[in-house]
Image (cartoon, rainbow, N blue to C red; front, side, top):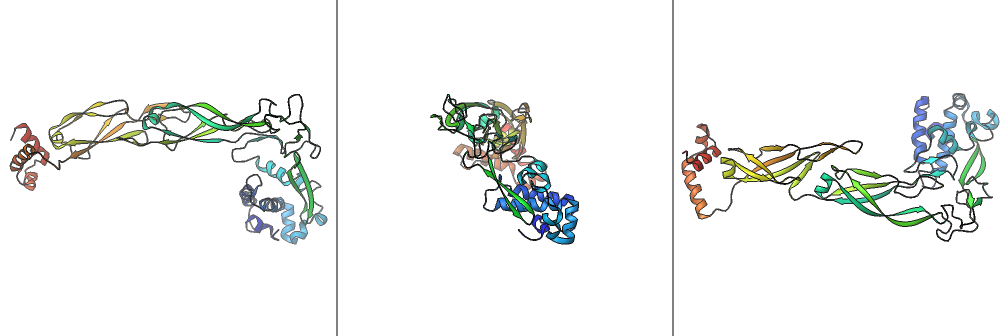
Length: 386
């Protein structure tokens, strides 16, 4: 252990109590054995907790600042109590008291290694078509998960028998060893090797689960996907994950979505975008065209003189808006973006007509000065006004 407690916590010697606590919270979470499986993480966590136990106490910190480690030596300073720092029986108890339990997907209730734990969450990746993402769908999915054994009821013992309290740990699921350091008694807590932390041993194991209390099974479940999801949406199916431990509740299934691209449509938040190509005559003269939407074809009126880049809005033809509770509130719009397509290959008749049109249009720059644009000239030509 480094000799300077401030260095252990990564704070300056004039750090405030709040700064010390904040640094300890960060480091303790980083090195807590339940979160960090790296070799040496547990020892690092003990160093951090020991340093915090001194520097968080105003009297002990003052003695340490004045006399160094000698000022807080348990023999010289009266000790910290037979159970460890501040009356806690071990460092993990102190950590739980300060912050409560934390963990990646594992919620705990009670204390000790044999406490109830919620089961792990499972991930399922689901691919949807564009329309399924817009309107929603109900899918049957297949998952593999660990479940409580129905034969033994989850206790791992053969029917007609029961587990008994582990004689090595007296049912706590933990074994403790105490060693003396210059900071006092350090208590190391590890899972009981005989019962693997369960607190109970099975003499006559269940043949179905081989004494584990849980079995691996494949299940099919129905998942209702609401309308409006996209590839960033996550759907939680409660209670369908791995079985809990020691009577804890099961985990959940987290559904991740992958929405396939559509042939025509693009999505921007709750709106659907569509690029629509029209020809020169339609743009110049105007037209009524058929536009695809996710609800079916719709009629769209193109006014005369429409230019490339013009947009039209079809109200309520977009994606349902998802609320935080999973319900929907209205729909977005479909935005139609016009692209005027100039032909690159002409039939003999089309070429003749365009050449005749070209003679009437004259110089484009001159036509602009006269106040008539290109499409105005085309409209006059096709309507016979010129």
